[in-house]
Length: 129
Image (cartoon, rainbow, N blue to C red; front, side):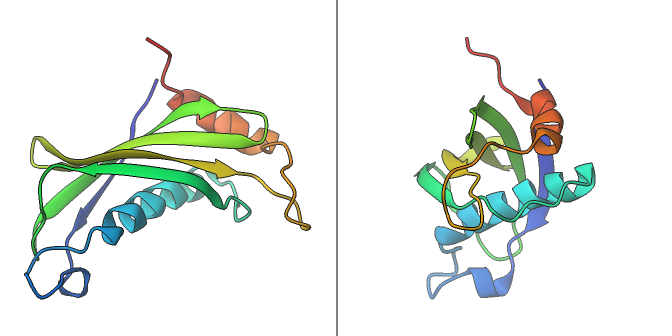
């Protein structure tokens, strides 16, 4: 199993009046990592809307803080993919969560995950404990 990692820095526009990042940015950072994985693997994917999301926020981020998104595949189903992820602040886990995406066809109905994507994601599947 491989963990896909993307580094970033909290931008000023990602903060609110308190000077801390707005929690919704965690989901955006993870989505950026997900699509970076697809691009790096040479797979064009756009039809993967979110079906379920969850997150736990343990530490805040402030403008200029560096972070690392760690992304892995928790479950690779026939039409869906569940990603587990963590966002690190230094060595500490600041945010942890997961989300499930469903591959859809042009009419919005679930359809099998393309073989090219399935092949890429096989290396990122987290084996069950």
